[in-house]
Length: 116
Image 1 (cartoon, helix red, strand yellow):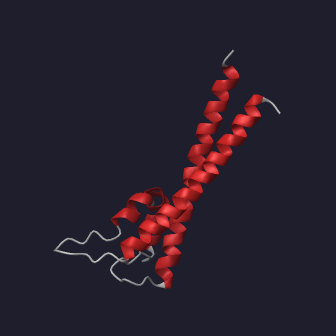
Image 2 (cartoon, rainbow, N blue to C red):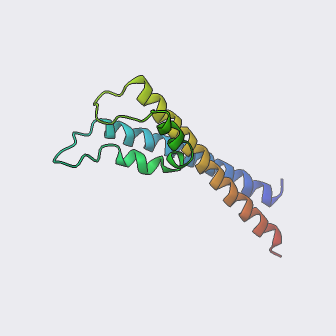
Image 3 (cartoon, rainbow, N blue to C red):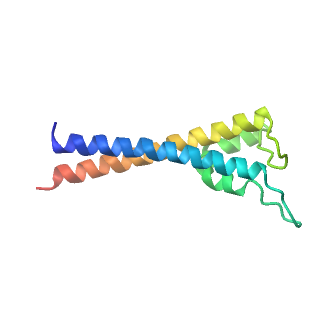
């Protein structure tokens, strides 16, 4: 195997491990958002999940909200619909994250091939 192939395999493993780490962090943050007690007059429950799954909210989230499907972080125990929507947003964001890492991988491989 050439040096470029070894680097590409390492970057792919890095991308997959970043996606796994992202999914774990996103679920932990989402579970904490469901256990959010709110407080005062402003309720920011779900804000952490919104930040972590923002790519999904930009791509598919507006479609789901037009259909009346939104995650209700006001309840301490999420419903099956809330969990399905949360899983959908996390999966879509993880795919977008992997595609970004893959694009970086391609750019790095092109730079390596061009260098003398």
